[in-house]
Image (tube, rainbow, N blue to C red; front, side):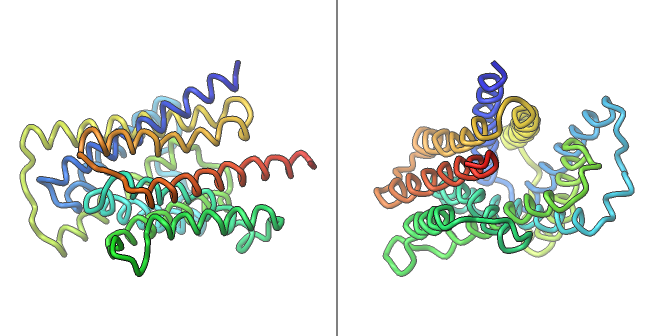
Length: 288
């Protein structure tokens, strides 16, 4: 029963993240990305402050000055900045497909940075998954655009964030980390806005889109946190890849995108490689 509840919560979280991306991409038609990051960061930060305070958790914990947390904040900024730019400037379906490579980058990074043992089967799956990313990016071919590299940069940022979280002492809760992660978007957005200019007062539609993005983002983050505490990680984690399914559906129905064969083939390879890597990691943990 715990596995079922955790799996359903994970699917709900991925649907929430996909809807968050959809509303951010819609708001980007009127608002510059820097301003969006400031609004989104402020809303998310306030929401997590309320959630953390309700549980009696210290908001400004001394541990935020530790090196892993500072690294985490830097990677969080990079991930959020580049991925938000990606969904604003490129098709939602292709950006989401590239993002699915994040677990593969985390496994490779854990081996290279922390010395975790990764056998040849998982290295092969990681290499195959990166091959899937190249198929989506199609460098050197007619469909290639440099803007697609924004999603790749965002993926590397999120993977770095996850690795830094592993290195940090587990003294900070996920709610506290949520506060700091969203808070870092505010100065990042301000810096980007100062560089790009184009600030605009959001109309009713853009305001509603940013509010919806924040609500779905916070709800998805919270559901993800609860899901990972229920049942078996090996059962629940593969449901992360349902985010791509939701993104493809929203891309087609809302934005009129038509993912080509390369995007669909690359996405299948990335997801298949990621699921195999996760299951193989669990098997090693059991001594299999």
